[in-house]
Image (tube, helix red, strand yellow):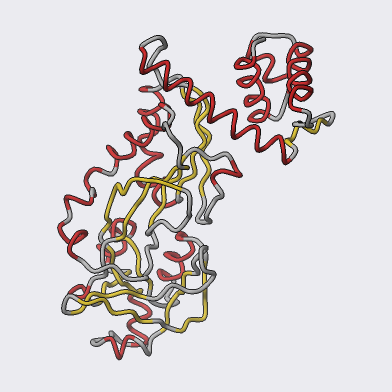
Length: 317
């Protein structure tokens, strides 16, 4: 095996956690795969993998080498496609991490279409509200709500989602409907704790063209959008989130919007990926597909997204 083939084999061993699975996928004997990696370790002078009877894991040096191999292979694939000497068909394993509410609304309902369009791509999808370390965890791209905070990443703002401030009908019947922000400040909230700061996120409003921030006390704090919406529906206080997630309870009256005249700025949605010279084709086609799915909420279709002031507020989607 030449060095590039060995690098490809090595990244698949890391992905699959198995010499046997990677060897079978590559159509070579397991002994050949083992020998190729041993020779690579010998050339580098470091141990790359820790082998057990059931699993293979990377050493710290092995993780660094894994990321460098992927970068080199992506650069070569990109160069070959530009020269027209390789197929421009996107292929390979693509690791993505999606905010759960965005995934359920925009990605999963149409994911079969993406897979049919790009049969050479093997998708590995993670979902969660936490900030992933894309480089350390080997994630190719993420879909997130809110302004990007992670250094070393680049991305594309793909949507601006209208936001609403709501509480349940039950809560408002017990505590009354606030008419001013001063009255609102005396109410209770379901507080959403930011994974970036570890602190509850304040409510944001735009009053007279200027941003206003209000922090409420609350008996419950959450770290996921699903829990956030569920707590509001069960009468635990106000929340501020994307309207598209609440269309049905708003329509049937179980949730009630307040202060529509002071609606918060639209919530930005970003696709982010590690900074690199060339974006791998499999990543590029997935990003372009996400842009298609979010086209109805594209930032340039919402004049408010450009005109509204930006604060330090929340984007809970």
